[in-house]
Image 1 (cartoon, rainbow, N blue to C red):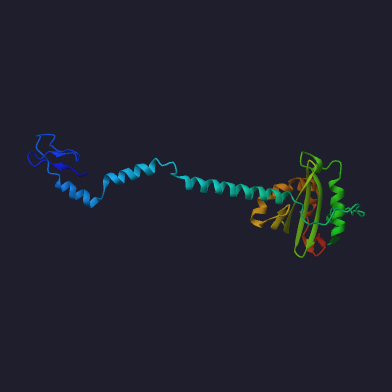
Image 2: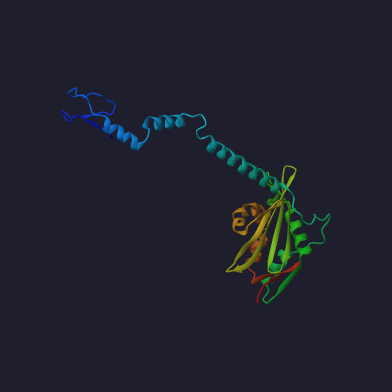
Length: 247
C-alpha cells in the first residue's frame, strides 16, 4: 500500500494527508500524483466497482440462465412421462386364447425322465399358457395398487422379448425388455439387449435398473422359472422356443 514519507521525520503517513501526522511538516505529494497516474484513476475505478456491486441488474443474466435451464429440464421430464404413458404399437390382446399346453408340467415330467428330450412351443402356445397363469386365483399378479393385467412374449433368433401390461387405476402402463437367456449351474441369467416403457426406448445399460417393473411378473411365474433353471438349455427361434432337458 502506498505511503507518504515525511521529508523531516520520515514518518509514514496515509495517502490522503497533506501535513505529517507526526511533526506537522507539509508532505511532498508529487510522487503520489505520479503513482496515481501510473495506476489510473483509483477513485473512478472504485466508484465503478461499487456501482457494479450494488447494481440491480447484477447477476440477472446468470439468474435467467438458471431459470431457463430449470424450465428446459422440467419440459424434458414432462415430455418423457407423457411418452412413457402412451401405449406402444403391440399386438392386441386376443379375445380368446387357444387351449394352453401344460408347459410347466411338461418340463417337470421331462426332467424326471431319464431320456434326453426337447420341448418345442410356438408363441401362441406360450402366450396362452402365460395368460392362464396370470389369471390363476392364487397368482400374486392381481395384488397391490398396480396389478398385472397381461404378460406375453415374442421370440426372435437368439432372444426373447417379454411384454407386460399393468393397470394404474384405469390406465394401462406397458413395458418390455429383450433378453438373451443362458442357464448355468441351476441359475437362469437374462442379459438385457434393450427395452421400453410406453413409447420411450430404454438403453440396455439402463434397462437392468428398470427390471423392478417386471418383479410381479417374475413372482407370478416363480414355478416356471424354477423348472427352467433345471434345464440344460433354451433356444429362441423366430416365433418358437426350444427347451432342452438333457443333451
